[in-house]
Image (cartoon, rainbow, N blue to C red):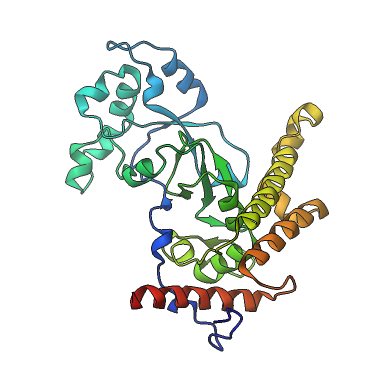
Length: 312
């Protein structure tokens, strides 16, 4: 079957179905329900303090990333995260526990949900599935749930992403290349939730934007080509975002992914074009393919794979 066939005249992507191969990869960040986040100064004080059981507070203090840390500059904040520890175990991390007891407990004791009242020192939604999926990963990919530009950025797996972020438990450059390609952006814009006008922000959801997205089935050579283009794009962007001491601090603050994609300099367009061409090749599509045909092809692939699975 040719994936270049026309699917529907009005391109009803709501017909797309979740694909099993996309399970347990994309996760909305945990919901903390409380003031668990702390600034860098407070984090340093806690990290330098001692505990009665002799363990470091680094066990429960993690860098935290929200949507603006991806699209703008990283705020350099941290979060207290006791995971699923009991109250007695959490209390052994003295200063972080007392901070949460002071700033979180009073409000959590009035929460309507019994579980959140009872386990006030834990995050409201602990994100256990994401934690499990990140085991053994060297990094995690993240994107804002709501953003004008659909950008993806690497973070260490120890970094805590908030519920304003979607995290992906993959650490390979090939995956980054597909996700940052024009193909996936078009699909995400069509299947996500549009906010206000077309040029403004739109919402990315694991359920509609990712779980239903049909990845290509590339050869090993095509995987290498996509990976190399992805590495180049990521390297160029990082070099632009962090030029070292070449710029004054005030100018550095203006170097954000949002500002970069608002301008889209030629080098960025060239890097994206190289990546897109490698991705098109993996799908078996012509380089001059239109946006509409990309979406038609993706829907056709989704339905084909869904039908194949149903018939087995």
